[in-house]
Image (tube, rainbow, N blue to C red; front, top):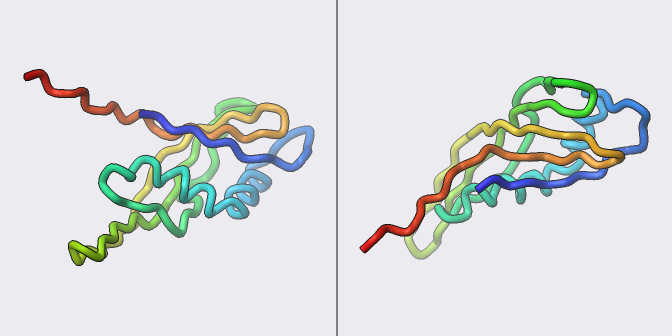
Length: 114
């Protein structure tokens, strides 16, 4: 599985890393939802998302960065409440006024043969 997410950028001729940082900060909850898709099978949620590295541009419209977040597992029935700090690598592309985020590819396990 590889998750994607799109954020809206302010209109600008050339996006800078400072503008991207501001957009990521303003959309912390959306980033939490985006990252939570990676941990939904194990019952985890991503919270308190923030930039974990400098934004590295490969060219004018693409690059990568790391996000830091709290990975929380909570289940009242099983008396589970665990929290740890984690990081994940994100790549991005800028198209018009959209910031397209792409998370890492995590292969899913196929069904076992009988």
